[in-house]
Image (cartoon, rainbow, N blue to C red; front, side, top):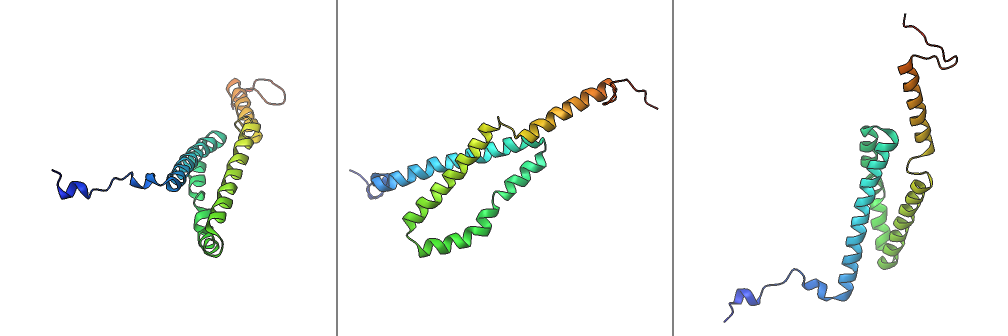
Length: 144
């Protein structure tokens, strides 16, 4: 004999019995994972490119600026247009922007050319200071 409490229990996985819901949920889950991976990667990228944690914090804070500024407009547009097409268009735009970012990182070799040049110049400058050489003559100088 089963008790009434056991027969009325609802499984948390019950919505996944509907194929359409399962597809949308799985797509959203994968997209969310990708978004968080991109967020972490951008933080690491900015830290490596600039060498300063403050810029990483600034980029993280500015990540939410489009949501704050464009959120009300997006809500109004979602109410005016077909939601399915609007969602597909916004998702394709996100995909395009992520692919553009990935291509920029791959083409630049992981760091922007300016950041690589700055690091190289800094390393050369540090070596020259350590050797106490003048940049133009290469002669050693004495601290006064």
